Length: 528
Ligand SMILES: Nc1ncnc2c1ncn2[C@@H]1O[C@H](COP(=O)(O)OP(=O)(O)OP(=O)(O)O)[C@@H](O)[C@H]1O
Image (cartoon, rainbow, N blue to C red):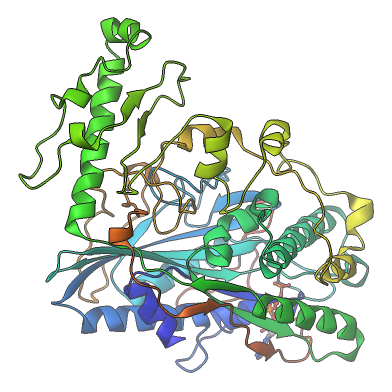
């Protein structure tokens, strides 16, 4: 795992996740047992420990700012695990201007492993768990701890950004075996449905389909970058030694085989030099100037008659450029749409040869701009229906665990219409960052930073804060800021066999505190 952690600090996105049927030991792997010792700590803790150790080793060369978010996906709703009160539904925005997949979730600056362990402990308590016949503290949600890293190379001035998802998936379950009813049944159906969507995505990637159905579930939307982007991904596969679950075990192993066959090419680091950063800042400056101008009544009138009203093409609206910088009039092709809707008002920047930013407003360009690294036809765009809010079909999904594993065998891809959430429209001019997905689309904002964090390993936990004031910078598709291909990306799938089915997942304690975790109703389970 250490090479992966090193990769995070080198600017690569990393995802480590645990997969397997319910009760097979995923939470145990990721978080460790109820009572932790130095040897028994889980993957999350080890990963963070390695991260901070490496950070300390690089002190003086690279300054890192590290912050974390922790969310869960429960019944297709994204919830903030670092907020003790309120179950506000959050949105996943793959093209968020703030550069975060879940921009409204709390983001907490951290400076040591104990900071993160404390937050993980808090998050675990807030996570939805419930008792089933298979696991008396079964995770009823997918949880994701995301570590955001921003590094400033003191020698070269390069800025690098990366994020690491540490995901504990909810377990697939045969609802006849887990004997769940009511809310537990509903949860199980949502879990199976999202794992089925994960299977579809993996199958699509393995077959190298041009369209990958990331948007069929919140889980695949969240993991989009890690599964099909430029990240490095490690999956732990869990199987139970129980003879009566041999079918599930075989299905799980087939899934692992399928995942291991996915090859996505070289992972890419998210680094940008000073030149690219300055260009991005200029673009941001120009956009801000344009928005301001558009707000002025006389210019709104003029916009409809002339796209050049701001005189930007003539160079009189440019920010201070360096003397060796090509002025914007030479770069050209700055125009204002006459038919822009309030949410789509934006410049089209087309900087020939630079590859810095291309934004268009036609259906075709939508296709090019935001979709899942995959082509989506115009018909799909126009006819798209949101599937997110649909309740799972109880009849169909009762049989899901077997069915969805069977889907992974090679075969013709089923037709599928992707949903295009309406909020995405205002993201067309958004920023893509290391954790976001639209690699073909780049935006920028100057001075984006996670709030000040100092290095040094001294525990200095800050209160969770609203994400609105957080800024993460972006990644450019400009060839100049891309690193040369690194290691070939291939999903790694160690198989970990759990101990015998033991419904005794009591009183999980991460580092401190032994409180129970929140139930779906919001109550806290008492530790047994
Ligand atoms: N390697 C292990 N050593 C000892 N106990 C283990 C191990 N793996 C799992 N267990 C125990 O098995 C039980 C189930 O494990 P766990 O809750 O991690 O499963 P899970 O896959 O996360 O289940 P679910 O999907 O229902 O949340 C727990 O009591 C846990 O302590």
